Amino acid sequence: MNTHYVTLPFDRDQIENYQSGDLIYLSGYIYTARDAAHVRIHQSLLAGHSDIDLKDQVIYYVGPTPAFDDFIIGSAGPTTSSRMDRFTPDLYDAGLVATIGKGDRDSSIIESCKQNKSLYLVTTGGVGALLSSQITEYEELMYQDLGPESVKRLRLENFPVYVAYDANGNDIFN
Image (cartoon, rainbow, N blue to C red; front, side, top):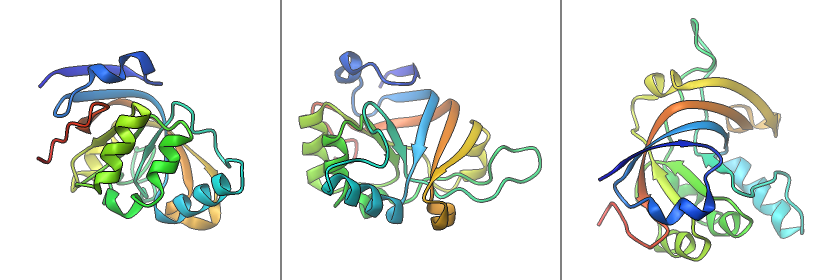
C-alpha cells in the first residue's frame, strides 16, 4: 500500500499509478450526488446533454447535514455506493474520473473503471463529523429541490480515501 497526496483534478496520465489499497489524501474541488441527483444527471445524459460537466471530475456519494458550530458543513459521511451502480458506467463514459462512497459494488463498475481509466474510492462510514472537518468550502450548485441530495461543490483539504477499484481492475474487496 502506498500513500499519495493529490491536488485535484486527477492527472489522467497518473491514474494507472494508483493501486487498489492505496491511501490518497485529496485536496481540491469535487461534486456531491446521491440517488435522486444521479437519476437527473443520467436523464440529461440520455437526452444528449449533461446538466453538469463531468470531465475529469469526482463525485462523492454524500448527503451532508446542515452546518453546526464552526464547521462549513455538517456530517458528511459516505452513503452506500451500490445504489448508484445502474448510473455510474454512463457517468464514467461521460468523463467522470472517480467516485467516492462506501462498500462493494457490481462487477460492471470494475469493468467501467478499466475501460475509462477511472477509480472507485472509499472512505470510512460512521465518521461523517470527522470527515466534514476536511471540507473547507461548500456551495449548492443544482437540484436544490432535492435538499440534502442536491448537487454540491465541495473543496477538500487532505480528505482520506482508499482506492477500492483501480484502473487496472484490481479490487480491494477480494
